[in-house]
Length: 212
Image (tube, rainbow, N blue to C red; front, side, top):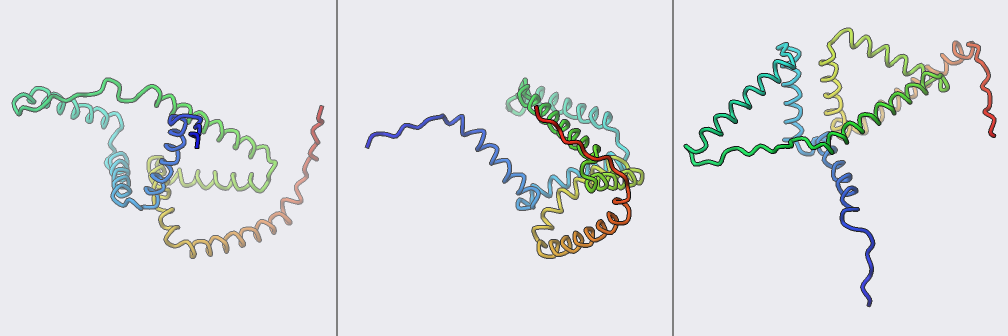
């Protein structure tokens, strides 16, 4: 048989392979399949929250102390390497590449634009149910933010993201039952609220767009 021609190169398959490789890693961390790594991330976040919130350690002070400690380690290692017949430390000139920094900036820009566009669509009031849900959620976050600091709020959000997926995987049947019951109760409440309040609000008729 004649050899089959293969179009494309290995470099074309690398982005897809790397993208699919990141998903199992994130899933293993969030679902606690790699317990050592998940526990290490949780411990690091807890230590950071304790330093900034409980011990009231400032970010600038922490960065300065870490820089001083790193400089002392490099100084002692560089000057004492010949005494122990060790090689001096080799620090790469570029620790964070420009390409990686641009990718992070582009990703943040895209997420921010997406968030603002969704917020604008909700604020237009086309979906009244979604609009009221957003108002209630923001009102709840404002109450939560007034009772705790921003760092504590971030830490609580991290705890939820880091623990809830694993708990859901373990108690999936019980959680689905509670969510189904809660969703049914919320729908009943919304129907009553819609019939008694929302339907009495006068609305301007929506004009159809003319296609040219």
